[in-house]
Amino acid sequence: MIPTQTETLPAADRADTARPQRRLSVWLERATVGCLFLFAFFAPHSIAATQTAWMLALLFWAMRFLLRPRPTTYRTPVDYALLGFYILTLISAFCSYDPDVSVGKLRAASLFTIVYVVAENIHTRRVLRALAVVLVASCVLNVFYTFGVAAVGRGVKIEELNANGPLYAAGVRAGETLVAVDGIAANNPEELERGIKAARTAADPHIRWPNQTIACTWDEQTACVGGHHAEVLSVFKVPRSSLLAGDTAAARLGLGAWARGHDDRATGFYGQYTTYAEALQLIMSLALGLFIALPRKRSTRGLLLAAAITMMTAALVLTVTRAAWLGFLLSAFAIALACARRRVLLLTAAVALPLALAGLFVLQQQRRVGFIDPQEGSTAWRLIVWREGVQVLFSRPRHLLVGVGMDSIKRHWREWGMFEGGKIPWGHLHSTPLQIAFERGIPTLLVWLALLYLYGRMLWRLVRGGHVANWIERGIALGALGGLVGFLTSGLVHYNFGDSEVVMLFYFIMGLALAVNQQAAQTAHET
Image (cartoon, rainbow, N blue to C red):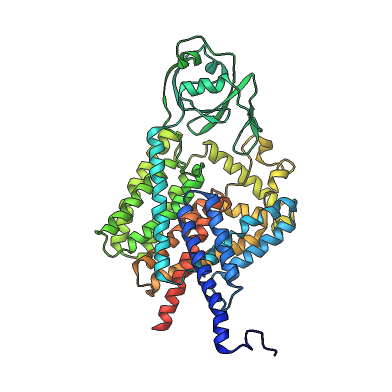
């Protein structure tokens, strides 16, 4: 073997050569950990900032492998299943009806690398504990924002309306909350009138439904006024020249009485209530796990954690998202069951009962539906798309084997006879297991289920095995277990695996749990 140039140098010269590499290695490791803290801080707020932190951490970690000595890595219990899931997803993308679309979705599929960036770069218990605390504390910040938005209100809620006014003529009725004109927020009659009077110049002068189909196009003659009644979205076309004569904006709009709207579902900084509810469920489970594991609950730490859980619970109720509520309730019971202590079970029941009662009250007041209501719109069309999805899945052997491809449904739903020909909202199947099987095939679904089983078994053994002595590490394991149960539960009726914000949080917490598992294994080996 021919020695390298560095190896032929005298020992002192080799040391001088290695010293800059060691310094660079240290700085790359610190930069990676710094990005993990940025990830933990921004994950409850911003997908863009969180993805930037992930990509920078991945870059710094990859650069670290170019320097000697190479970073130490270790195997985890989920390696084969996680990598197998990605490989099968890759195959499905290339076998898709629309490879150009499906291959573009591989970036979202590559978010699984978050697991390894987190797990492999936490070398001390201090960093592990700090990351968990930063994530929970950061989430509390957007809860304050949520409470502020709920208190101030949004939009103009119609209480009385003049039948001769332009809004009534456009189809607006009492009980409607108007929130925007031509895509610009309106929180009082003056802003509504201003938006209706003058057309806004825009490259895309359209109001779109959530599935991106056009609901209204504004121009010099017509304004598009957006609103909602309960949870039903609405868009009204109001002629710009139809304003009445009057002394006030309310009179010119035909408004008899109005108030600020307070019936919006909480969305945090995400702008989407389902995404926010799913993210809250994961972080609340982590916070609850930490609280349950805390030895002295009547302490400053206990008070802060209890306050955080209470506030996040209130924010979750304000999202009015039934699946996330049920997910968190089952998460709490899973945590209590893992602890197997009567006191913890009673404490969980004491927390769960008020949450359930408050949730049912808010659900009835805001959405006018019961917890399980087959006649309610979102439940009824879920049943329809599930039936249609299963029919397409079993219609051809290739669908069962590799699926139709990620996002191919957006181009082919008409030819597959889905979404009742466009009569109901189209987009995805509102069920994570069904969506994975539909897009990627049954084998990929089985590997995904195996991944979650292996992850859950690892967490159960961590909690029950007694090798995790520190309360924060035990709390992370408990919270991750509860979060997994909640994620699986809500995923039955939501495609939460398709929400990058939610998946990034899920993978981040998985990385924390794998770091706990590795440190517990080291402790067991040393003893």
